[in-house]
Structures are given as C-alpha cells and as structure tokens.
Length: 360
Image (cartoon, rainbow, N blue to C red; front, side):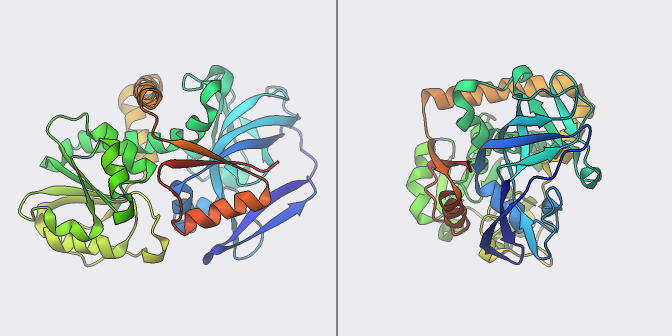
C-alpha cells in the first residue's frame, strides 16, 4: 500500500490522503520508500507554480484538479527488478510526498541514476537524477536532516550568487532580497556576504527582523514597510524570494531605472502572488536554477562544477557546525505531516526551524 498527500491545485489549503494498492513492478523498475523528506518554503513555490512550471507533472495524481507535491529527500530501495539497483540501496533525490515511489532507472553509473519514466522525459533532467549516497561527496550520514533541508535550497542559492557574479552584478553594488528569513534567501545572503563591497539588504516581516539580524549575513535588515529607508538614487538589483506582487511593485516604483535587474526565485507569499507586467524599470525575470546549472556545466564540465559546489557546501556546512542556527523539527505520520504543510502554507512556521517528514 502507498499513501500519498493530494493537494487541490486551485486551493492549496485543501488536502487529503489517498491510500492505494501497490501496482506490480515492470521489468527494469524499482520501488523506493522515501523515509526522510524536507518541507520548506521551496515546496510552497512548487505548489504555487505547479502548472506554469510543470511541477505537478513529475508525479501525476491522475485525479482532475489534484496534484502531488514534489519534495527532496532520502529513500531506500525496497523492491528491485533492475539488475543494477540493489534492495536496501539509499538514494537522494526528488520524491512525491508519499511513502512509496516507483522509478525506472536509466543511465546508471557509480554516482547515481536517472528516472526514465516516459512522463518525465520532457521535464528538466536536474529533477530526474537520483544520487547514490554511497558515492556522494556531499553525503554525511550523521547529518541527513541538515542535508535534506538545505541541500536543494543551497544549490539554488549557490546558482543565484554565481549568476549575479557572472553578470558582474549588473554593474551595481547593492542587492535587495525579499523573504530574508527564508532558508534560500539566507543561504544566498551568506554567499553574497563573501563578495567584497556588496551591500546586501534583506526585507522581512517585523516579527522576523531580529532573527534575520542575528544571522549576521545582511548588511541591513528592514521590515517590508521600511523600503523608503533605502536610497532611491543608487542602483540596485532585486531578488524576490517571496513572490509578493505588492512589494515587487513598490520596489519597481521606488527605484525605476536605478533597478538594473529584477528576478523572482520563489513564491512563498501565495496570497499575494501576481505578475510583473507594466512595472517601471526592468521586466521581472524568472530565475530558473537549472538554466544556470546547464551553463556552468558547459563552462566548467560536470566534474569542475561538482567540485566547486562541493567545496562551497562543505564551507557552508562547517559554518552550521560552528554556529548552529537551524533547529530540526521532525513530523511523523499523516496528521503531523498534514499539519506541518498547513502551517507552512499559512506562514506560521518559525524561521529558525527546519521541518523533516516521515510518513511511516
């Protein structure tokens, strides 16, 4: 039996559980039990942009109007009809928010495999790759919860920092970040803070302002209502992790031509999502991390890219070891998992906490 959380695509607060018999595996398939999954603001972005960015297509629900939320995490193989994948093997990757998943492994090597399920063929390959923990340079068994919470977010942050540096920060020295308490924004700010001469300004809710200041990576932390405290006559770029259309409009109207680049990374403020057409200054772009990943793979080769990312991740993880800022909160079973999703969607989650899920 497999239990899956279903989410109404047009009313993300509506959820229900579905339990169904496992279908028999075909030759070449494997069944995995995802057993440690992360739930972060990143997942709310997946739901908010589920149709426009194809996130609902990774794990089709086969029920009209309902979607299955993709989540990052670890799982172990419980059944295998593929000669190259052993029962008990541990994999890191992209799973449905469920206690079971079927993969069709392809392009196997010592480091991992690809899911070659036909419905995923046209979807971006970065989400179809599964890493074998036994050959993973980022893996450390003792800190799986930290990895499952921050690894995909850190990769996005690393690519944002790299993209901005690759563009010479569009000729500016000030970067504005919304949703400053979110883990992706925080990791981005940590990386940007290492760039000499950058003014990194984080915006957050009044309730999270003190927390963001304690992180130590922002030059300044301001509440959303304090936008007017940033000089309008100095050039800047805006990286939007919240997706709040009202604040995006305020940023564009304040800085106008002094805003040299504006991009959206996430959509955690789901009640305030909106487009960017007709705003002063540059048209907001959607930052799609896999595109920068593809560019850097071409620039440096797969091994060169991986080594740079590994080195940066290790430095980031070492900082967490020295100055822990993230408290892991575990949720087990249907009711607890469902409640964690509901609270995150409503924005009622302490930013200092990271939430990991186990269904069984």
